[in-house]
Amino acid sequence: MQPQHQAAPGDLEYVRRFINTWSIPNQTRTATDDLPLLARDAESWREALSLHPPADKDSLEQLRELRSDLRKSCEGLDKANGLLNAWFSRVSLSVRVKSVEEGASQLCVMPADGSYIAYILAAVANAISSGTWSRLKTCGDCRWAFYDNTRNGSKRWCGMTKGGVDGRACGTIAKVSAFRARAAARAKSDPGAH
Ligand SMILES: [Zn+2]
Image 1 (tube, rainbow, N blue to C red):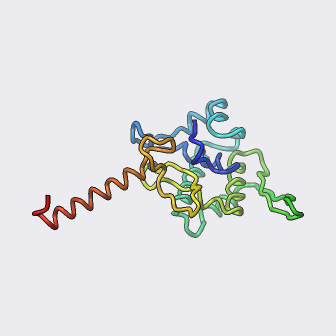
Image 2: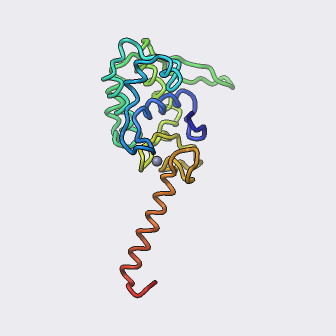
């Protein structure tokens, strides 16, 4: 069960779940890749990821490469968007104009082949144009991908509350270690203090 308040809007949520098929679980603290298992089992795939199944043309190797590049983009490591642009030039996408309220129109990117990769990249393209892509972030500590729904977009960790439903409370952990480091530095500079 995915905690609801770190969920991304619309299809971007499926991108977030896809990125999190690589994770560092709380319990083990070792990097785990769920993708090979999910790609083999259609039902688990649907449950965990989306209604769009992997197509025959989506090799596991390519899915992993896409996941890693999307993660890099969320982690701010694709500054010039070279990785994203390389993917956009490789997949088939099409563009439609959608009517929205008050006679306005909006561009909507859609996958043009049956691949899961095109489906995910269409969701990324739409998130970029609607301004939500930059709010898909990865935790500075455990690297879990979450959607930043704070007003000013300043969230850096997956969860702030110890034992909260939205992660392992990396924000609290970071605050406590910063506090300890400051206290240790103070004790060092003032040996007489108790
Ligand atoms: Zn975290």
